[in-house]
Image (cartoon, rainbow, N blue to C red):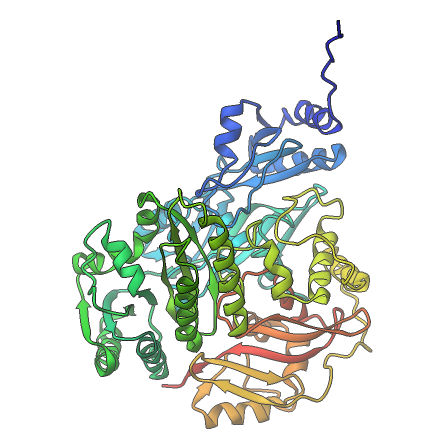
Length: 622
């Protein structure tokens, strides 16, 4: 007769148990399996089961919790509203799920200075409701606003329909109070001097630190908002019309896109009222004062009328709600469909959206044996598209077809100068594509950022970065520079080169409203070129024209630094270790793939490497 084997605690379970005992003074500990299962999943049901769940008593307890986690070697997975769409929260048996939803206090609304101070777990829509009586709002408005927390918006750099005019979350964060993985605390502010650490932290997907408190910028709610819809016989006509609208100097508050498959798909669940014979429809919001809206609406209607087969205008709230209902309820209709589905997220330069839509429909045609259709909707003003793939759950060919189609969509976006994710994030879902988007040098530099913030790798492990590759070079000097910036060592080597090479090329893309410029270009030369084309760039100051644009970015302070922060889209750089070349960012208006490494080069004074090329947003002069 055999002797029953006694269960031996694993090292992970022993560490978790000891951590739980110590952390009980700072939060409510839960090991109930039902709670762990329910709280360990995101909106789409992706996730895992943690060893335990911990709800901090207050934001001041998080530093102590993180110190205990570091002491016991326990990995922490932060949880906010769990509206994530990329598998960005992955609890497991040896990990602690840190539930921050209880930290939901709006600490202060400063109406005069248009800012609000909030705890990490404040729901976006709750903040909007509190601001509305003051005639103010927080600009980021993702469709998940009723679920998403402000801290979640920050760590994903959320966008939303109105990001075209008002920017993504990055553009509206003034400061964050953060607990780092070792339990130390830091405050990252937009007006800090030196490298833009706040910019690196925004969009970091909960892997670099835990937000306890954030101060965000507010804006007045527009006096008047009118909506328009244009229906088009082709995607090219729709895209050309969007470019023509923006080329007039009008900046719509929102420009949304829905293709033929999306229109037909939504119509299966409710009557959207959208024209079923259109190849694409475009929804446009115009806002401002009554006089501004009257002026801009007239221009937009004229431009829409040149190529649209139908134009609709909605001026009162009832008509506007009806016009937008189908687009804003697209995520709900996907869930209600009963079909298998996958919501994608790729961004291409705005002028290349027709090619992207054509590529997607070609992909569908190649995989009809496993897929039903792909509906394309998205934020057309930013080139951020959400191809949603539908399939029959009982089809044995669906899984392989979905995998192949998703790979092909990513490849198509990258081939068009786009990126793998515009706003959903990498999470676990898109880790496999990181090596397609970034070179080994670029991955290594990002890995050095993670190591500088989290040497033990205990915060939200397994998210964003792929497994190390032997092709990745040593970027330890780059990592040391990040650590110096993080610890406040601001002594710069004045001999460090700010610019690499002598590139003075200037390329203006009016269809995308972007500028690519060599770092050695003087500001005077750049300003002259911009004037010739009737455009301007907020990053280019009126004074100091003998400086190069690279020198400006590398040494900027004060208001010049602030303007650069909001205008910079991408940078071709060298990495200080051996001066290896890299590129971070692109001409895409939205890009949340990996750490926003280009931010380190703003006011970096050569500590991380030199600048070769820069990419900025531009606007048409009116």
